[in-house]
Image (cartoon, rainbow, N blue to C red; front, top):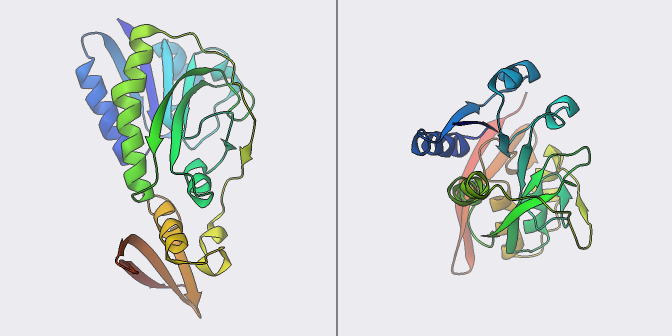
Amino acid sequence: MRNIVIATIKSWNIRNAEKLKNACENRFDITIITNKEDFSHERLKAINPAYIFFPHWSWLISEEIYNNFECIVFHMTDLPYGRGGSPLQNLIANKICDTKISAIRVESGIDTGKIYLKEPLYIGSGSAEEIFIRASEIIFSKMIPYILEHKPVPVEQTGQETSFKRRTQDQSNIEKANIENIDDMHDFIRMLDAEGYPRAYIKTGNLKILFSEAHKKNDKLIGRVEIIEEQ
């Protein structure tokens, strides 16, 4: 029985990791790691995994780890297009509706690793969280099982290289965004609407108005508003 590690955060990924662990319990011994403190070279050495999968991980992976274990991350662009941070938000901001999830080997460069496989993903509708959940289903039901079953040999990335910059919290300020119409506003709100992400907002005095759950109805945009007082 091969040992596998899944290092991930976000509630939807953890749920799907548990489902995969239960489904594969007779074939693979899967360890799920959900925080930085439990992710150490010493622990991984004791587990000795055949693969370490990173469906969503917020911390750097050390050279000591990726040089000693086969580490695979999942990036929401058709690499080498869109290397770098905040891929979903940058894709939506660029009015892209169809992308791919790329499973790549971790190397020293940012999103420069060899490709194991890609799967299409539609991002033209839904909140960021809804899209992340759809992506998670693809990763755990198709991509990880395929890699475990077929052991594909990764190949070099080909095509035009482009890079994205990681978005800052200040960029969630609607007044600083390039918004010209209802569709622009809808995309701006939905691309930031997910667990752990800085939602779209405007400020007036010491009040911060947060926007989420936006959807279009006829010629209007309807959604949820929260108002908090900042000290």
